[in-house]
Image 1 (cartoon, rainbow, N blue to C red):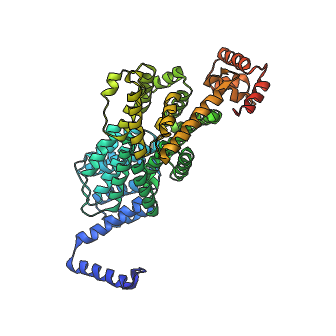
Image 2: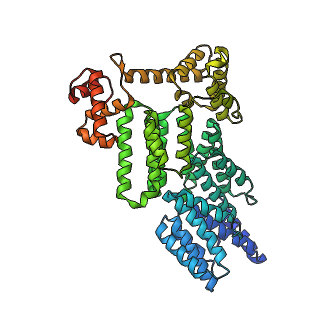
Image 3: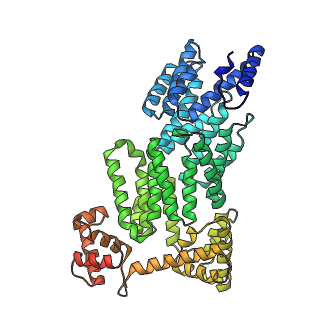
Length: 524
């Protein structure tokens, strides 16, 4: 063997590598070369080099009937790596039908389930993605030392879906399942996968600081390693963005989601792109000044859906975006309508149940029975208890202080800013007696939120409703009254009522005057 064929910047490495390989040849150590073969396949698959993966994998296969079937199977995997999902599915369909009565069909079904799990995820079909992932994980055969990485990636995919659906039990189950995957060869990618799943678990538990740190580390390590396509660290970027939102760092969260959207376009993932868009809409909807932009972005998504039938599986994301928006504007009937037309979507149904609880009077006994294990549970329970006047002022303050102490520990701010003005004022009062930079920062954010709510809703002593302000924003555009009504899903008669109320409250006689007053009040 020629040592010059092995290139390395390290002194004497080439000679040393040659020596190792020659020793393996002399000992006929087939396991050594098989591991090298698998390691190369893994690296090509993780770095998005599908064509090279296919060519290299075929180099280790003979021309037997089983070998030819395996070659086509590796070609299907290579097509998935290159994000050519149509070709991959065609190859898999052919393989499944031609091997139906053959012993190798079990291997074919394993790789088919693996590929279909990833493809369905990127199409937005989470139900089938979960079904195929579970079938692949439960496969009775194993494919060698590459198997732990395959298993880890599938569990990570399932965990991502559970996170999107806000299925805390599902995330915790994945966190437990990944611990059972052995890593005797110390595979780096499997270690990264375990860290990514840990970050997702910490997020749902409310450990935002730790979740952010781990997710950030995984993103850096995997991007340096060239992970792309289906192995790009989109899940950890989502964790980072959500943590930034909970830190109440809205601009940074939107920026992180914008980066993720760019990566999603590069990796041809409409699902990731739309998830990030909905995440941005959720953040923007917190500020009444963004209502016009939020409505426009939701309508743009609906237009894209109508033009492209392949996006049908993502229609629920548009409804999710509108649920976030209408919840902010207290349009409960519209929220109920959106929830009702998504009966099989667990996350939207959960949001619907959550709002229903908010509308009903809370029972202090049931609140006291809530768990206090994770940071989120501690903060949430104490926040609720602090709002019961029957507890008495001292106990209310004690509960709020308990929530604030845990929140400072994990970096949770946004959960307080979602509360009513009375709670925000209580936070400000407590901050005056606590010498903490974090508390000072939260108090300023509370004051800004109160001022924003009051200043934008109060005109001449009489308040405009959220819906009236939304209509008002459109009066300064070129849209006709009928077009504004269609955009906002408002009937003609209801639009007339809104306009009469707006003109009366602003003391104006037409839309042009109303638009001018809106500009003066910084509403448009």
